Length: 264
Image (cartoon, rainbow, N blue to C red; front, side):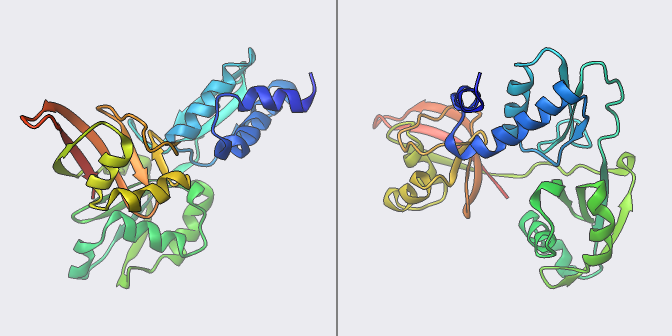
């Protein structure tokens, strides 16, 4: 089978925006299968993890192990290895603890911490989940990036901070905070729900959807008429993300009542 034929078969079930990652993941798996190479990846989002899992299932002699540093982690690193390889524990994750003495520190958000880390030239792939709580922030980071961040991160959104690398055992998860909103829509079409969630007109929301900036359950979705369901996670680049918490039924006027949760 030629490489082009193999690529077409691999691409069949994936969005065109995902083809580059599919190629990369298939190379990792091929190296493990044919040359017995063990690969520890950067942090993967849930969609990328699903792609790796699907591709691993196409081989008979490769296994994969995912770990994000704690149970229930959204972003996780993977170890892709020959099926006989037993040592899958060295996932390479450390915790960067960030604290500040200024009262303004208490107003910092997830986006503030992420923006400051990326402004240091750090790749998003080296950063796992970020947990913000009242007394500080715990950021899961790749071990190869932790020392650099510890030395370089001195302020977050112009607020002075101190950092420390701590063991995973001291990681403190933050309680997920959602801003619950109740909306009424004519249908379960994605464009209508997204426009209400971000309080934008449907015309304005069509552009990011059709330009590939909208994801449903981490998968790019360009069809405005896509039907959403309870439990779906929707993100729009530059706007944020929300989750469909509950579809409550029809109102007296025949509209669909919904409860959504916007991530703070």
